[in-house]
Image (cartoon, rainbow, N blue to C red; front, side, top):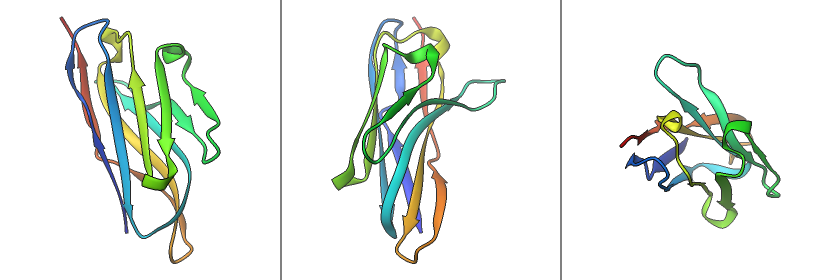
Length: 120
């Protein structure tokens, strides 16, 4: 099995910064794309940022220039540096990874989420 565990969420004032981390563990052979999604109350889950195993990145327009996604392939970890946070960034942030397991199966895995609250 594969587990994704997020950390780094919390309460921050508008204009502040947070860094999210997501560590993948378990029966992992390789990880392709890793990404961060978010879901605000009453809204659908949306892609925030994604990064391929060769570090090509993709961002939602709403976070371009403020958020930076990165990964450590040796540690199977993905990060999301969030700067200039706005109240509309408030959401539960979920980590996602496309994993090929040691048994050769490929699947998408999700973390349980970490809450980010931007409020004064």
